[in-house]
Image 1: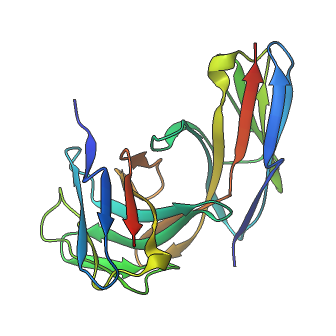
Image 2 (image 1 turned 90 degrees about the vertical axis):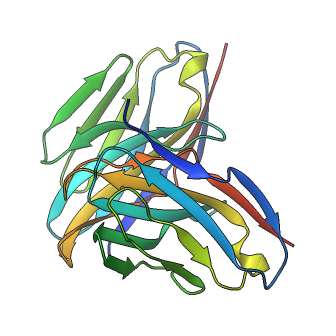
Image 3 (image 1 turned 45 degrees about the horizontal axis):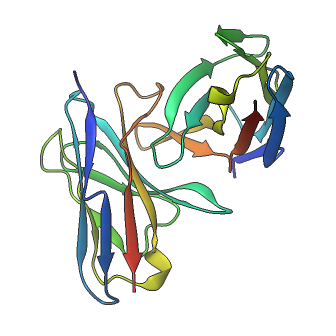
Length: 113
Length: 112
């Protein structure tokens, strides 16, 4: 069974204090690892897709990296508007014609001004 | 702009009643999904569909059903609502078999 574990569950940072969120996974035949951002009362919003170990993607203050066992979401000099829950999802295992994403429980990030 | 919409956004119902949550997308995506989100569990898959007349059960499908009569819509029905089905429900669609999901804003359901 595919497993996706995110850590920490919650993270509080001061504005400008860089840190990393972790997503560890155990799947066979990874077909994509996804990062989403979710604001309170909203649906998740897509950030990045990573497909192979060594791959990196960047967007503003966010950088996602991937190894064979885990992915990191690095947040450089965060601002209060980066406060949100960050979700990781993996796709593996072809099921009935497609791939089913499995989500981790998320990391709740609060950035204090 | 293309979008995915859910309705109602908030609903309160009583135990035993039938409830239908609507999901409509205008991207012409074949893949559609229903998830529920609860504290401590994250997003859990209820049902999914790869196209018209295709529906499949997810990990928490008991007590739920879906039907896909056209590309745009995937309504989720709770045949007899239970308090354990109090949750936030998200519909999502995907344009390819391996691409990212596009989520609706969610429907918050309370079963009393």
